[in-house]
Length: 126
Ligand SMILES: [Cu+2]
Figure 1 (cartoon, rainbow, N blue to C red):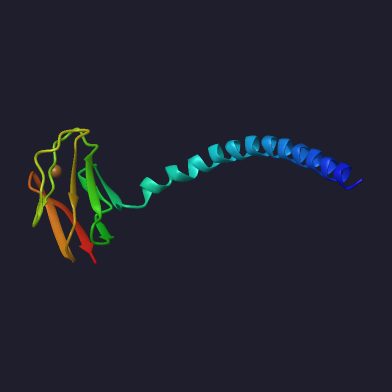
Figure 2: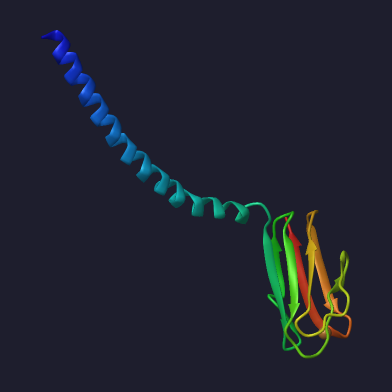
């Protein structure tokens, strides 16, 4: 009697195990769902900001960033421009060209375009 009960229990256990087998299957598809979350990780490390050069002006003309931020200037004008002042020493930026600088110390950094000195910009780093 007892042996028969044990055998039945063993059979039931095997049945449960095969049920787990299909459970493993759904677990592997939930692993695939987890993967897109890992894609968000690269966003965290480096802060970036953009300044557009258009219509002979920097936009935004004034920007406040945290130390370690990389600022990228992109010239959208057909006229060439540059970004000069303090640590900012870009080459001539023709249309579509960009220049990046990573600000590692706090301070206020004003800059101009030396071709058009009326073009002013400022980056405040804190
Ligand atoms: Cu200019």
